Length: 111
Image: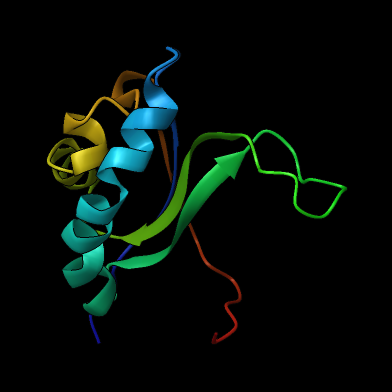
């Protein structure tokens, strides 16, 4: 089995009042766009970053970006793929502020 490096990715949302609306408008296209990468095992984990965990039931989370774990050959490959994502084109993500960090996965539990 070939070694594929692991990458931790954090992408903040744009700091403008339209980012949440843009996220809501593009979420279905974003999920469809990434389904092949998830099915192939290239995207291991993904989800929205929140400002904090709500302490009360029913309180909506304040979304502030996305966090992901990918398996990919290079940071350049990831950046190229992220730039094609509907969240990038739709004005959700601030890709200039994205953090992409290589890491060695010591343990992983099957979901």
